Amino acid sequence: MNIEQIVDKTYYWVDEKARAGSLSLARKLSRRNFLSRLGMILAGAAAFPLLPVARSFAQNSITEVGDPQSCEYWRYCAMSGTLCSCCGGSYTSCPPGSEPSPITWVGTCRNPVDGRDYLMSYNDCCGKAVCSRCGCHNTEGDKPVYFNSNSNTVLWCFGTENTSYHCTVSLVLGAADE
Amino acid sequence: MRFITSILLSSLILIPAASAQLIPEEISVETLPTPGENWFISKTGNGGYIFDANTGEMQGLLSLSRNTPAVTSWAPREEFYATESYLSRGVYGDRTDIVAIYDFENLSPVAEIEIPNHMARLAVRNHLGLTGNGRHLAILNMNPGHSVSIVDVVDRVFVYEISTPGCAVIMPTADNDFMQVCGDGTLQLIQLDISGFETNRVRSPQFFNVIEDAVFDRTARSDDGWFLITHGGTIYEISTDDDEINISDAWDIVSEEDEGWRPGGGEFISAHRDTGLIYVAMHEGEVDTHHVAGTEVWVLNSNTGRRIQRIKMENPANSLMVTQEANPKLIVGTEEGGTEIYDALSFKHERSIATPGAALFEDF
Image (cartoon, rainbow over all chains, first blue to last red; front, side):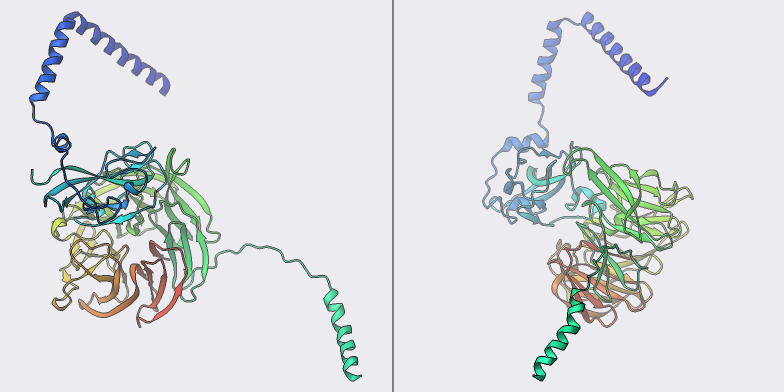
């Protein structure tokens, strides 16, 4: 049996199990039963405290001053790379056609307006040539490559379809004192 | 009349010479002579420029991928080894990571070995290390967890990928082993068998704290092992004795009167193994300025723990390397992209070399 036959058989087995499982559930549960359970889940989710990431975006009220195209901007305290805000994106969005990396390095920056420290996520935007505008290399809290979650020299285009580096954004994940 | 006669005679002599057929010149191709004293490779984004530091003359170019971390060589086989990473359409498409082997004579690729597409694509000298027996090339991976790919460069085969969570830097030691620095403040020793498979793994006790004063991921080979330096300027010498890791007593390079000076830059530390002299790019700055280029290069005697010279830089030094000859040269890559050559023992500036900005230098 060659590899293709093994793969075909595996797919067939998975399909068969899924089909049998669906039929079994359909026999046991009515549509009303399914809808009532779905409703319970949605109501429960609303009552449940949101995760920190979601809560930080819900806050949506950080007052900021400064030029996001300047390396001195408060969000860039641990930034290393090219600023997406100079390349057709912003400090929270990738330029057209590039792909945000889901894996990042983090830092903590102080917003001079409210004096609070915020947990920052620096996401690379990938899949295009390096933008090479507004280069910025700040090293507050930066650690060596062997401590890579806090290392800003790493190219963080992991988990993307294309791994070339284009530019970097800086997202607020939450207040560090929360 | 005499003047006119002279002109006529001169014309008779010159006319046949001028009308003789000029032999067309033919193009030829040089080969690289045996590398001489104080030759070095200047690793740039465009490849490895080979120079003679004694004359400042370029000898040839190794074409390397833009993502090549470093290049190394093994003189007995007259080969260079580089890790390279390519995308099929330049900035997108299928990724292929390889170890490329180049010969000394023509600087041409003579073999390539595909490796897992996990190579850490950063220009760092110690993301690549050839074991002491010249057989196995260890390549640092980040995916984003750390691992190391082992390639047998004699049989030209990828051996396997070793998982090394939390540890990076490749520091070859003994015949077939390498050490790493780990985020928990320890060292890791990995010993390979003759085929390149891991046979033993040893961890040292914790000796530094990555939050309070991290050891740099840039290290320098010593006579017996490696020098490590922290962001604050504390030096350790590390070595191995079979499966034991030895860590020397720490010594500080910044005295009280020099408070505020810190090591930093790119590849900012190098050592001359025979004399034990360590060269470190230094700057004045706050905590977390460890990537700032050095306004001075400090020369330290590792045998006495004393500084013996401060070399002031006209342009800040981002990377440096000292050659290993008896009359060594200090090669300095400046922040502005220049390459400066110093006598490494008299500390006199000898020449500037025009090159594309070098990320790091490699010795032969």
